[in-house]
Length: 286
Ligand SMILES: *[C@@H]1O[C@H](CO)[C@@H](O)[C@H](O)[C@H]1NC(C)=O
Ligand SMILES: *[C@@H]1O[C@H](CO)[C@@H](O)[C@H](O)[C@H]1NC(C)=O
Ligand SMILES: *[C@@H]1O[C@H](CO)[C@@H](O)[C@H](O)[C@H]1NC(C)=O
Image 1: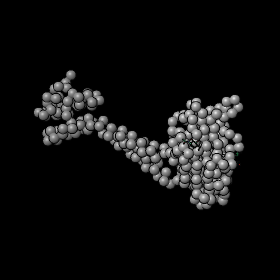
Image 2: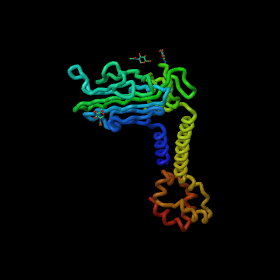
Image 3: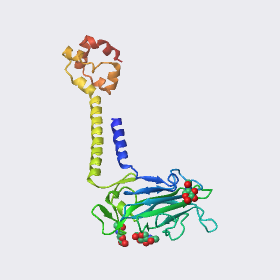
Image 4: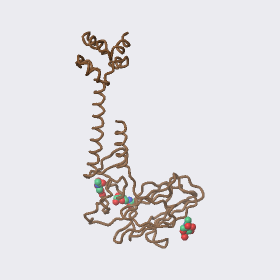
C-alpha cells in the first residue's frame, strides 16, 4: 500500500516537473544554438558564474522568425566606480559588429528588457572579471513572429506570437507572462488544462483513491478476524481444525481487542471441546 502511494507520487512529480532545453554559456563559450521552440540560456550550471568569462553565444531561429529574450533571473556584480565590471551585451546579429540591442550596458540587477532581434540571429556576449560570486543570468530565448499569429501559435498580450506548445510550461516566453496565465498550479510547477494533462491527473487521482480503498478494506478485514471467529459455527471439528487462520493463542486473544471477555460460555465450551485447541485455550486462561 505504501509503495503504491509512493509510486503514484513519483510518477506524478516526474510528469509535472520537467525543464526546457538549457545551454550554459561557460560550457558553450563562443558557441551557438539553433532554437526550435525555446531555450534557457544560463551563465553556468554552478550556483555562481565563474570568473574571467569572455564568451559569445550566437542563437539562430528559423528564417521569418525573430529572437525574443525574456528574463528568468538576472544577478551580476554591481557597478564599481560607475562602470560595470561584469556585463552583458546583446547584439542584433551574428557578431560584435552588429548593433547593440540593450541601450545601456547591463549589470547589477538591471536586466535588459523587452529584447527582440530584428532578424533571426542574436548574439549574447558576457564578460566577468576575476572576482564573482553571484548567480548570473537565465534568459528564456524564443523564436517569435509579429501578429497575426498562425493557428499553431499563441498570441501574447504584447502582440508577439510564440509556439502554442509553450503555454503553461512555467517559463515566461511571452515576456509579459501571457503564456503562464490561467494555468492550474500544482505545487510550484504548473500544468495546462489540455485534455492530456486532465487525463494524467485523473489516472493518478483514481490510482491513489483505489490504493486507499484497498488499504481500508484490508485493515477492516484484519480487525474483524476475531469477530468472525466468534460467529463461526465450531461444532464441526473439520472447520476448526482446517482453519489455521484462527489459531487460539494468547496472542490471538489479545489481538481480539478484549473480545475474549465477551466470549460466551457456550462458545468457550465448544472451543475447549476441541482437542486441537485445548492447550492454547489453557495457556490463555488468566
Ligand atoms: C571567445 O572569443 C573571444 C573573442 O574572439 C576571445 O577573446 C575569448 O578568449 C574566447 N573565449 C574562449 C573561452 O575561447
Ligand atoms: C494586456 O495589456 C493591456 C494593456 O496593454 C492590459 O490592460 C491588460 O490587462 C493585459 N491583459 C493581460 C491578460 O495581461
Ligand atoms: C516592455 O513590454 C511591456 C509590454 O509590451 C511594456 O508595457 C513595457 O513598457 C516594456 N518595457 C520597456 C522598457 O520597453
